[in-house]
Each structure stands twice: as structure tokens, then as C-alpha cells.
Image (cartoon, rainbow, N blue to C red; front, top):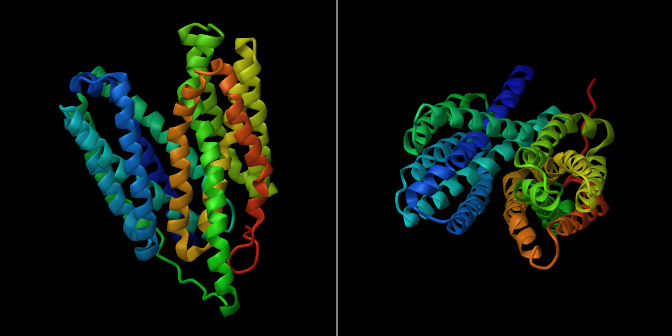
Length: 395
């Protein structure tokens, strides 16, 4: 069993890397596809909303399918679907075709995202210690891999169609080859009759509270993704090459933090990761909002990324463990609303710039992080069995 569990954990890493790589391959090709289709940046923003809508719908369906048929069945199929639909944006030559392609690709991406997270919860439950954050870190590794591969493809003169088609073919092979290592669905212990009504009443309320927190912290992450570089360039007048370090610093500390968060959670608990991580993020983004110097702003972005790094995995994990029989559906609710926050973050900051200076708009993410820190006690809520969800610390 230990060997099969180690294999399942390794395979879960593979699917997270695959998802990050497939999404990253599309991102790398955005400028070329935008030019070929002949759309403006504003129009592209609208098409990216379609990508998000598709992802949200895919998450809702994927979570329910994972609960009904098991992640071992759904994850490989979702990997094949996500890989196959990656081809579509590369073939689009008309705006309406690109919009439809992104809607379909988003659906495939969302299905893979939520089903692989449901399997990650299953692996974490079997390990009886936190392992979720490391999975999310490897999603970022997939993005880096996509950037390297995409740059190499552009360097040898490949256009979007051959690049995305090749990536899709490799993705299909990887998704199918990795399927055998996934865990089978474990039988669940029946709930005590006296607990049935309590579970029906308490679990949905808690899940939606977790989803709201995911919305808040992922909105903050989305704001950093799109506005960190512009902040250094337009507010602090940093050179373009220096301004790029704002996002680079944020992304680097985010990845490092997720690689370390599982050990911190095992030692101090998931509540501490969420509470003190969100508090750290509050300090970091407040420093960004008020910093008069470039180095201070970079320090703030670094602190912001490190603080946020472990928050989302704790929320996903708590949703998945709240009711093992509905892990996929619960994760889809939290991930889905969180994804809405990720999309809303850049737009919210953009709207606020009409009212206040860009750096002062970051006080809103600071408020949201402070709310997340104050509400971290939601992770203390008992699991369906009536006992708190805990993991045994291993040496």
C-alpha cells in the first residue's frame, strides 16, 4: 500500500504539472493568436472572460463526476479533454471561433483542475498529513515549463497551431500513461444516523464560507498577477526591466511558500497557515500600497506572495475533507468561486484606478487578507464524523 500511495502522489504531481503546462502554453501564444485573429487588447480581455466561464462550468461538472465515478476515472479523461481542446485556440482565425475555442478549452481546464484536486484530497487523506500545498506549487512549475518550451518553439519559427497541437498530443499521452497510478476510490464509513441531519445542515454552510474566503484571497492573487509590474513602472517609475521583478518576486515567493507550507501545516496546523499567512499578506500588500521606494515595494510583493502561498491549498483541502463522499462537489464550489475572484481581481483594481491612485487600490486586497486572517477559525470546524480533521505528524 505504501508503494502504491507514493506512486499516486507522484502521479498527482504529474497531473498538476500537466495542467499548469497546458494553460501556460496557451498564455505564451496569446500575442501571436491575438495578431492573427486581428483583435484589440480590450477584445482579448472579453475572450479571456469566456475562458473563465468555461473553467467555472467545467469545475462544477468535474466535481460531481469525480464524486460519482471517482477521480481515478475522471482525472485521466479530463486530462485528455484539456489536452485535446488546447488545439482549438491555435486553429482559430476568426474572433468568434477564438471565443468558442476558449470557452471549450476553459471547460476542459476546469474539469481537470477540480478532479485532480479531488484526487489530491484523497491522497492527502491516505497520507494523514498535509501534502496539498506541494501539489499547487508544481502547477506553477508547469507554467515555467510552458514558458521555456513556448519560447523555444517560437525561436525555431513554430506558429501557434503546430506548437499547441504538439503540446496537446504529448498531454494526451501523459494523461493516459499516468492513469494507472491513481488511487481507487476508498470505501467510506457510513455516517451515524444521528449525524445525518447535522451533516446536511452544517457542511454546505461551511463550504460556502470557505468558498467566500477563496474568492477573497484569489482576488488578491489575481490583482498581483496583472498589476504588480504596472505598479512599479507607473507609480514608482522603475525601468521596465526592473518593474518585471515585481511579478517575478511575487511568483517566486508564492512557489517557495507552497513548497514549504505542508511542513508548516503539519507542525502548526492549517489554521495557523491561513491565519498568519493572510496576516503576512496583509502587511506585504500594505507595504506595497505605501512604499515610496522600489526596494520597499519589492519587499512588499515578496511578503505578499509568501503570505498568500499556503492559503488557497488549506481552503481546498478543508473543502475536500469536510465530507469525503462529496469531496469533488465541495472542492468545485470553493475552487469555482475562488476562480471568479481570480478573474475579478484585475478588473476590480482597474475600476478603482478611476477613483484613487493605483498604489492606494491595493488597500482593498489588504482588507480582504485581513478578513481572511480573522475568519481562519472556519478551519477548526469539525469534520462530518464529529471529530476535527487532523493529520498525524510524521518525522
